[in-house]
Image (cartoon, rainbow, N blue to C red):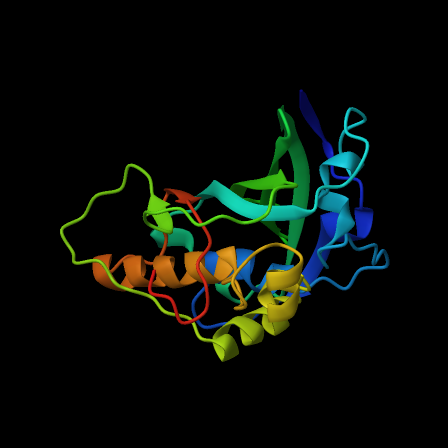
Amino acid sequence: MTIQRQIGCLPLNKFTSNYQCSKLNLYNLNFIVLNKVQCENHNMSNDGYFAYLQPNNLSCNISSEYKRRLWLGGTVETFFSPSNVNQYVNMHSFTLTETLSNVKKLKQDCIVTYKREITANTCKNILLRETRQLFYTNELFHQRAGNKLDFISFTHDKNSKVFCFNEENIIEFSNITANPHFIHLDKKYNKNIEGYPEVLVVQGPNMITESIKYLQEALNQFHFAKINYRIKQNLFENEAG
């Protein structure tokens, strides 16, 4: 089933955030700044995160909410050239619009795909578009072997970097991004409810922004036309990924 419409919780769909910096970083704007939601609708799921992204609130074919949700992957595109980036640096406001693309039922599980677009309010140009996928399940966590985060179809001649996030890093990132999801804040909840080890789970945006920062430094390039990424499994506090 494919749906092209505004996602139901209007206060979260479109809002303006003040953002000033000497160099425009669209990735931080998307993954960090524009997650600081001041919304009127505070409906939450049992996992502590916003209910508006639960499949049962997006599709009439799903009757109840899922117990667990995971960030699956996505694509991030930017739409300006280095020659005209300076015209956006001193802009005081941007708008984020979220649009539902697809709710796909997978036997007992579900994948929600939605699009996020950031526009500059003064010129209405699209600066960044992200297609994001969330995976929903009622099964408890189980560990799998392999890498945590993959960048698809991306090659370069630099050495990779190992990331490790401690408890303080994870909680601070949740506070900065106003992310109330329990798996990033409550170790007891993780063990007793979702079947994780008694540790915090690193946020998807936390992993992605640090990885993109590494790519920017390694390649001496600030923005990329397109990045495809997939989070293959959870990364926990004090675990190298």
